[in-house]
Length: 137
Image (cartoon, rainbow, N blue to C red; front, side):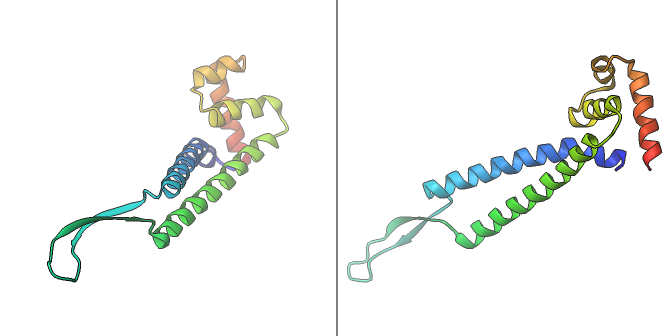
């Protein structure tokens, strides 16, 4: 684990949230049948020819399956990566370091808040995390 992977936690959580919302919107559109529509012109093949406009609605199943699969794949990958980060932080023996890493990378706090919440100065929190990350690489 390194700083770059820990920094990805925020964006993984953001991606998960957005993909779940996409999935909900897609399911809502499928349930209402409001995925695709078009207006076309036509008439009866019998005389007299009178042009009429028709609205066609439906669900493009091939495209729907592709979008749904893409959402599920992205969700699975992001959830696995986020869980990997959480498990790594939870497996650290030092409770202070666990809390510092949680505050900084999982809760996405600034250094001032990390220090305040963990009863140390922001500079000391930064130094401890930097030294920890250096020791594991």
